[in-house]
Length: 98
Ligand SMILES: [Zn+2]
View 1 (cartoon, helix red, strand yellow):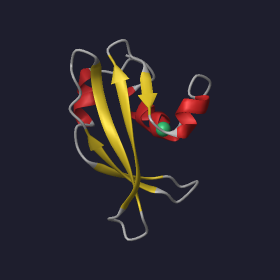
View 2 (cartoon, helix red, strand yellow):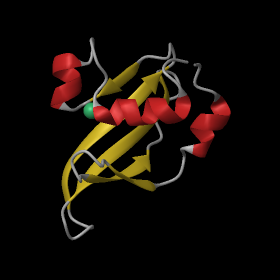
View 3 (cartoon, helix red, strand yellow):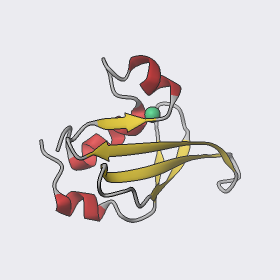
View 4 (cartoon, protein in one colour):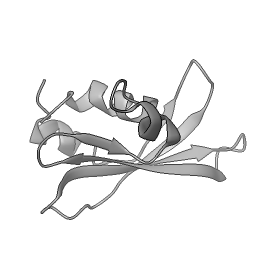
């Protein structure tokens, strides 16, 4: 499914994401990438139990050709075979490729 401009615009808001499989909670913040190389980008900030302290962060982006990229170890190690949970969660909103 192509990533539409409308769906990308919808994600240009902050939101919290909780993974039920691990109980991890992330604050997802839209970034302003260079439009010459990236269509959209987000920062996933993993929050501590207090709900405020950021204990890890990963930038996720979608390039002009529709390819995803994430900074996490899961993506770097297995991203060519299986999307990490950060990319997979955004794919659920905007589609697999542009
Ligand atoms: Zn990731």
